Image (cartoon, rainbow, N blue to C red; front, side):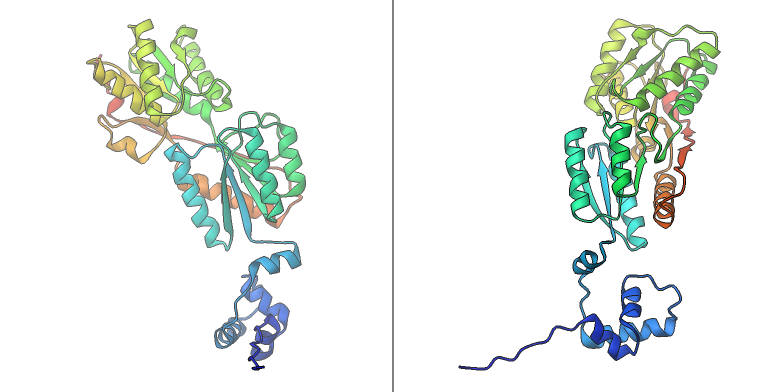
Length: 342
């Protein structure tokens, strides 16, 4: 019988012995928890790791410590390019801080969202970033906060007492509508959004209040919902124009809806920005390059990302701190789609 060489697996203790430090010091250096560990000691640890060709098993370490570097990111929709860009930036920023991200898309299903959240828990996620479905309740959020630090973003949950980072949707819609009225528009429609959407209700309320503050009546028939895509925006625009030929401006729930609205106007021989003004919401990069360039309310994704990650890091640092709600102001880019020829 031939004897086979037995290769001993290099352990963290082996690295500690070679570097002449404690195993805890090696663990802190590897886990990027260097604290008071000197740069000289860190270099010695890294040299020992390289010499021994040590491979750190993060999964095993997480099981031993009941901790991980995993952040769960659950979002309701990946089809909107705004969310796609936001997810990319969140992933990069979290990686810069030493965290890995597990991404899941609920497709607006509360059941799927809850299943994904349970999956995150089974994989020992350190915290959860959640853009919730519209039927998410305070009780759902509270249950997850009891298990893991949970930051919700963009979509508010009514009466929740948890960390939230979002946009002042009401003010942005109010400001856009006020400017259109000041430019001479008297017949303004609101297009887009799901009827269950709290964001939509906030934006519609801003649209209504701008009319009332200007002493103008608003009409329920000038509000129409539709899905968040260009095709739906185009169909909704054609439908509302058939009902109301006096319209001179369209406040659209999202940029993608506004793109569809402008396509619809072109299809019936009306020029966006000249015959009918069009505005959007999101600040997509395509908005500036669209023909004509789209007026849109934008919260820069870099700014939103910074606030979400900062809130997460703060919550991990102090899990007992009071909940924090941040509403970011949208900057309105006035472009050619609202050059109304009075």
